[in-house]
Length: 469
Image (cartoon, rainbow, N blue to C red; front, side, top):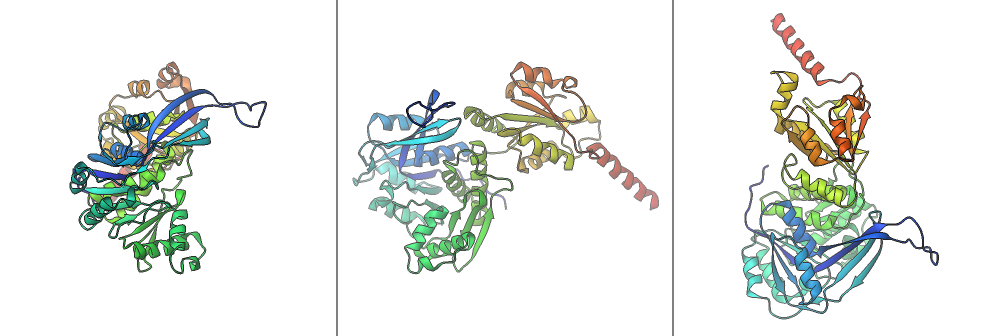
């Protein structure tokens, strides 16, 4: 079923942190200890915890976002505020202590150590009137618990609990936090958290030992214990198990080919945000969890939230995120009319060469100019949607010209991939790719597969059937 856009805000409630990445390269160890020397370091500050959830919600571009979080008055809290997107409205809740900072040192894009600072916790003072007003106007609420006391505030629990029967409430729990208020639409613990929560219940240690069975059993037990509409136990690259009580559970698998990625940090937040937005827009719980799994898988793979239409300008966000973290951009182009096994094989090979695959797709007018008035068989929007549904395709960009020269100039791919039996020198795109520091790669094309042949064969069969009549 299709979802209707809901313009009421998603309100994110929880503990906001400041995440700082110190990223560089390491090619040697120190002489005094077997630890890497990281050099060429750049610093990047990001909103973490509930702040990351609010950031991801804004990047989904599905309506307004409000963050309710304890914020102190120190310089680190100011930096946290500055790291939030301007689209996020912030309501500060009472706080005590120094803003929590989590500093990661990364070498080659992979973390090698994390250093934590700060001890901030939610204060016990009264909530500001703006917080209650924000919750009353919410289209959905996401509680993002990071164990810093926000979910234990009595007035906040009362307000969120009073909303649970009228708007979707998604609760992302934490082992050091409070249990969800009764009536939440869904809670989203990961596998380990669900196991710990369920083990603390009567008979919790007697559940089956298999991962999927145990996740289903734990989820069902937590549905009853928390009086929740459902519990989605996340399983990383395998997806999630959704339990709704009465031993009813279903596996929501991750998209085929989804792997662990290079940095899973934030995947749980992305899943919870996508579920909350989908529920706010009227999706069924099972549909919302499937959307959450899809978004989280894409986020881990590319570092970007798959916002909006995959054939639209959001493709540039995907490219920017991958480039920002040092990933390799791979691009290819073509008409992709009547997608066949040769196309799929080429795209699979191309995606394996880098961290992101962008397909530059000829528009309908461009295809007609190249192939004649009878083409394309499939309209550009449908071709874009089919390509975007393939596991290896991260983004689709449509161009109007006969060749994507201008698009390549803007995209600046590290690798431009084409299939066929010609040399790179034969391709008009090669020059512009090289001018912008990229390379052209030719891949073998699966023999015996051609859209033109498919069209001719279908026309021949249709003509034969008319002759028989």
